[in-house]
Image (cartoon, rainbow, N blue to C red; front, side, top):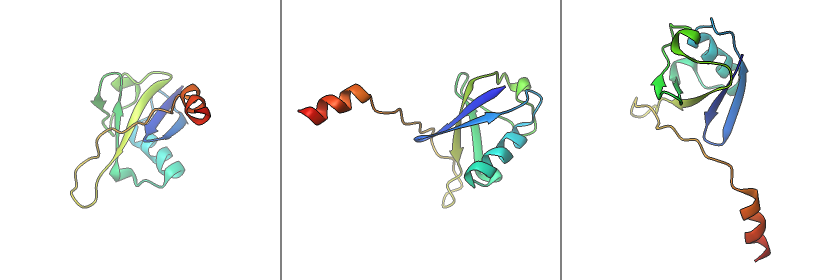
Length: 100
């Protein structure tokens, strides 16, 4: 299965097995992004549930084409970032504003 992991303007497409532990998914993200595994938090957007590292994706209802938010731990405070996913600008609106 594939899942989409989103953070700000970036989307990572990961090939995962439903029996894969969330910690393994975080390790894949670390390989792609250099975000340390222990500073990543994954949130399933459809349920707003924070995914548990020691449980499988299937156990937490993560299905094919699921969208998962990635937030990072803020080093200064030890708190987690808020979910921040920026939607792409509407291309038609950009064209209109440039021609005005």
